[in-house]
Amino acid sequence: MTTVAVIRPRRRVFAGSDDQVGRARLFVGQVLDGCPVAADAVLLTSELVTNAITHTSSGKGGKVIVTVYRADVRVRVEVRDDGSDRIPVVRPCDEARDSGYGLGLVDLMAHRWGHHGGRRSRVVWFMLEWKTNREHAGSGSSTSTLLQYVTSPD
Picture (cartoon, helix red, strand yellow):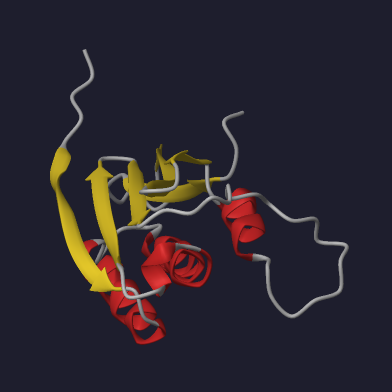
């Protein structure tokens, strides 16, 4: 039987304004300090919080709630917004434009991602996973741990 250590979820509420994106990044970075995928989680959180503020009611005086779940080999981050009639979609990268690539980045980097909700509230989430492989050093030293970022379920 495999035992998985799950750290209690950490949640923080942010005002739905542009100046809160950096604070959300800082929050996720602090929660995931020492985690091998922390930098990726911070980047993807930034994209989702920006989208929530830009494309939902959160950006019209509302709020954004960021929740971080951390386990032995995976992290899940949820961004809850105040809802929208529009469904989050990944836009094609072949269009020339200055913005609109956020979910494409999430789709590319996350092991899994998705969304649920609607007009009143929506959660967009992503999951990052990594594997721990044991390798023996040739010099007779103790076993070291190599962390590899998993980019696909294969």
